[in-house]
Image 1 (cartoon, rainbow, N blue to C red):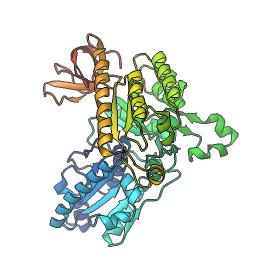
Image 2 (image 1 turned 60 degrees about the vertical axis):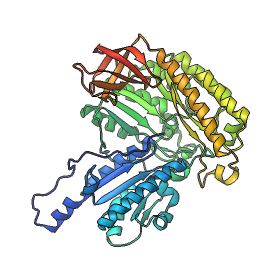
Image 3 (image 1 turned 90 degrees about the horizontal axis):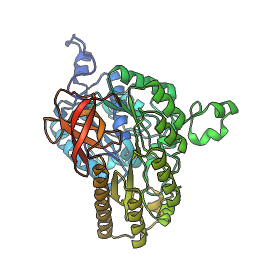
Image 4 (image 1 turned 135 degrees about the vertical axis):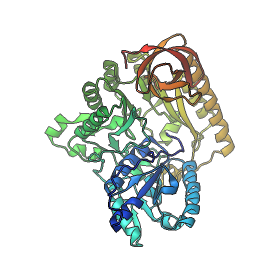
Length: 489
């Protein structure tokens, strides 16, 4: 999930620069400006905020002006080949910049760094340092190694790192919505996915540190947080450690352990004036308890991102997904029963190896059953190192993949329009986030169901919860007129 674009902080210097500019230390500190680009999933963007905090403590300021940077860091994604190609093209551009200024340091972070490791230094001569998702605290040391002209690589995976002790610097923040990471890694081992290999095994963050971070966001005026993880429903806090080691926990640890529905309830009660979202859920791990907690608290958004990947049981088995279509339908039915107005989105892969016409038709039938609000749809891309790449021949022609993907997209556009039309004439509560891309005279925000709404500005401002009456719609956007400040969230 995510978009191939960067986020970076505005040009205000975040770290404090000494007044004595005659000293060598002062001059060096003034020149220490970092520029960060992030690609891929929401977790990468959240990680970049952690890295920004680490850099500031090391004497850097963060800038969004590339020509000011002495350090360029690219936070990468390996989920699809296209994402990696985008990063490589971007590095080519940075190489042209470095040719003009050889003192610039270029580093690669994230999943691509973890996947390629030292090989990255050989393939991309411009790259000075390589750091994996669990080694960001080591960046200051790695930068010193670069300065000493030594190899600077750390891609070691951790059993306990959650960065819960670091206060993220909100990059390019709108001051309204923020990500709060609650888990890291993944144990699911889907055959198409590199995440378990690039981010390691699942571990959860201390709930106290989560609450402290949200308290800080509340103090700063934020109105919405998204609890984030590769699989948030797997959240399990029993004092620290890997989820897989919970079987070794003491009886007291087992009795006092917090699962995701517990955490969700605690956060909702502690911050009744903040909207709460979470992502991403895995069908095999989402419990009815979570859905009931969502129904209990008004400030938990009625929206669930529930990746299914395929509508075929045969393909799901090859993907090593732990749910069947019957179980998935039962979960959807439970959501519809307990949360009738819940928005649901999906991830879908077209053209997974051995996928037949019937498998594809099963996917389209599943979509007809659920009628998702929106989705993230991709053609299968073989990722080196995954079990699918090792054991399953990618035997689907690219033209067939593209054809099936287009059919899935067309189907989703039809369903998205069906869902947005259900709002016509209704009044929805919208959290204003920014100026609309359509017009500078309109605000843009989202409903609880994560549907975008645009409406004339009038006297409202970002951060307001506003009741908006919907007049028209497209498949992706609701268009309306604000009525009043809402007493809902």
